[in-house]
Image (cartoon, rainbow, N blue to C red):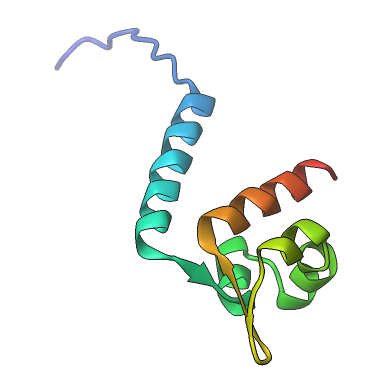
Length: 90
């Protein structure tokens, strides 16, 4: 048998989280150009009603909204930035 080694590994969870978020953001920007309310609900794990009440009524989200008839879309990258900005104000 091998003797047990006392090795301590330091993990910077914030750096890992930041790296993963950056990579996800890069992938999302390449895949998604626009998102609708339903897709935002899926991506944020929030209900459509909660998004409507807390985010989509905000002037910053309305400023990036793209409308055609009754359908609304939001540029994916900009929507993420605005949602994070609003959430950080809570």
